[in-house]
Image (cartoon, rainbow, N blue to C red):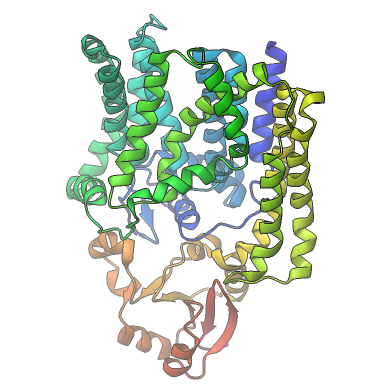
Length: 542
């Protein structure tokens, strides 16, 4: 592949991942949270101790917040800026996946791997959502793969090992001890399975340790100096207890991530049968055994680690998608060499039909129904594009497998971009407080109080630029609230809020969407300003 073609491909990835990036409003709770923290960093000028709703928030290290803060400083405090850093990191992950596939199995495997990764449903969604898991995944990739290249002898320069240590420091600054544990654990598994135990010593580098500490230690020492109980809260409560206990209430069954991974490779999973058959027919040529052991060590260690964890979220397994994409891309590469087109490839069209039917019918049948005629108008384009994608492999004999893959990339990129508008109309109606915040912002005057009762919508302070009073609710802010000097003003009980409500102040209050009977009982005479599946907004006086 020429450099010009490669540059055009990389440009396509950038355009693809940044298109319609700000179309969907910030979703609760994660996107609102990870937008508000960097906004408060900029407002306070404090880039050491993160704050959320005005109180100390030490659940995560600051690298991701720093990236978002830079984006907001340059682009403004809006949805596009809040997701820009994630999209940039995701494109870097796609390019690294191309590099990984090209080094292990050739440029076409790298190309197909990057295409599969970029247009898989999971990577596209997580890679454009304002959460820190994609940043962690890419930092881990940059920590694991260069070290493998050096230890396996594919690259001789120790700079690859130093790069791995630096990236491990960045992974630590993204999500804590995972950045310290995962890279050496995965490499150790590979060394053991490959019977290369003597190379364990080569992985230990004094200059590398110095580089890691230079990246990771300064913030750790600074935040500890400003928050003397940081070590206990961050390393014990947020790291150890998150894995070993149910304190964070994210308990799921052991098999939870199996459908996440399988569904995450939609729609490419439709080609799985042909890929497996091609790999079996080329036994011994699929991939070098050592490379296979390395990728499987990477995938299985992370998958099993989070499967046994007591805290599970779908985004946690983002780091296994790049190595899985390399395996998938290698399978497509072999399929392109061996496919004769003698049998029509109908599986993609069948899957496309299912996806089209789901897009047409499920929203109107869900807990948050939408008007069918309005939905049909916004869903028509993505339905058409996914059906076109499903029909392309029917012309396999005429096009050839390689062109099918390339045309699939183009069609899927258009399809995934086109679903942003329907997603904004549907998900935004119940998972975002942007519409409510617009009503609130338009009514706010200097001196007004904004409160949230029995809930905390992170997007409210982000969209209104106003700190909120929390009533009968502390949740993830409990640590910061217990240390806040103004706790009595911003964290109230029911009786205290009743006094505030009856005072001379103009008080706006946000409730959960099902709280209307409670509101009528406890707050007679209120004025209803907004009501939707996202919540209820009332005020005590005009």
